[in-house]
Length: 248
Image: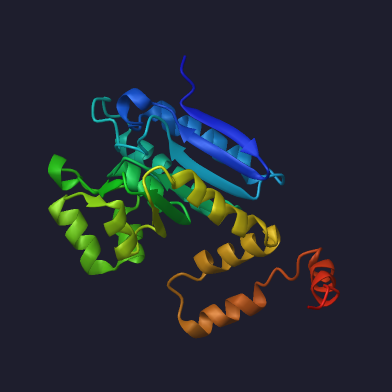
């Protein structure tokens, strides 16, 4: 049986690859179960400081597999899928969605669950729920406007038109768009900059951002102060390395 999520680890980075290339990595229930299992394994993996989510076969994800019959408990399964994507967002490790080729609808919702979206010029982004008479249930109506603004989100959701990688970067949907063939290098460069910093600081900064989303400024400031996790154990060594560095 084909392994639907491939995981490879190297130098503190765990790469999860959606592996249904013949279906442009369209999401079925088995793939979601496999993704959930990998996320659960990453939650307590102290050897991993960054997660990269990508697709196989030159495409990120074509969305939900519309050929799959609905689950008997459709609402219950939808809630579990949504919780799985929220678990991805809530990982202590930063998550980069590396997008090439198709990134449509449920695939876009999956990418939006990452902290960063990095794409190349082959990428095409679209929300096609309306094309099929569907309404989002994996976070599109919440995550997309927070990423690109309400007006642009409505444009994407109501027209169902595709946008290029360059357009995605220009609207803030993608953090950056690399030239065709340059996606791996762009992800590696961003990942290296992230991993060079304290993993403790990365995790706590991420937690503070998400936990205070929607708070009034005064409440957010109180949360930052009173829920502060404090310094990393190597903070003193980092400062010492700075103060004792060779002077030019």
